[in-house]
Amino acid sequence: MSFRALVLQQSDKTVTASVESLDDGLLPDGDVTVRVEHSDVNYKDGLIVRGLARLVRTYPHVPGIDLAGVVEASTSARFAVGDRVISTGWRVGEMWWGGFAERAKLRSEWLVKVPDTLSTRDAMVIGTAGLTSMMAIEAIEAHGARPGDGVVLVTGATGGVGSIAVHLLAKLGYEIAASTGKPESADALKQLGASSVIDRNEIASAPDKPLLAERWAACIDAVGGATLAHVLAELRYGGTLAACGNTAGVEFPGNVIPFLLRGTNVLGIESVNYPTERRVAVWQRIADLADMALLSSQTREIGLADLPAAADEILAGKVAGRIVVTP
Image (tube, rainbow, N blue to C red; front, side, top):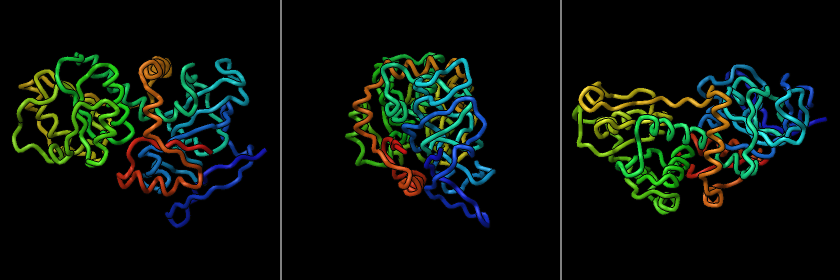
């Protein structure tokens, strides 16, 4: 049997992408074979498709860090033929062939079942971005954030993590300020549940003092860089920032004063190796909260041949909402 996939090849350190037909025998040696119904496009996918950041070491390679589909064959006791499954993380799409294909073969410990109320397409509207968003929300909750305590800031709010974070926070009853560099997306952010929308330039520069006026009860930061340092200086006493992105850079010009004088917290959110049993609970909470019709209205669908252009778009910061891939 054969299947179609986006295949990356490397020659003279240049990575090229093309849609090819591959034999099933080339699939990695996993214990579950999945007929991929949908994938999605994340910032990391953009890096991989364009051969950046040395995330892929072996070529040819099939990228796609997320996928959802139906089990076609399984030697695992955890999954049977016909089960609907999700894969996110575990370096699938980086070190292991991923979801930009009609078929994938994975290790069963990397899979979770799709919640009953979600379709496989819904699962990819959510994807790694939504999983990360819910993890970030649970992290700030664990450190005391509650609806009614004050405004929660979401940075990079038109991106995948940010947009779903805005929506889930709103469903939980929080007052949200959404930061974006796309003023044309203000109405869409308010539809998702943002109480207010601010220009990212308000918080994009390093703070000129160790502490600024207290402004945010908590923050979900998908940007990093100077933005993280600026927001940290504006967190209210005891406030928490969940750091889950670095589109503005991996270094931030901050200092320890907010920790010492305001008792603030910065929590790292890492979804790649998040334990499987905890993923199940997070996915179910998302399924219980999310308005999939609303999220889908801000999602567009593409095919395998459209992926190189989508990679360029997401790397240039031109994507608002989500992109679902239907191979």
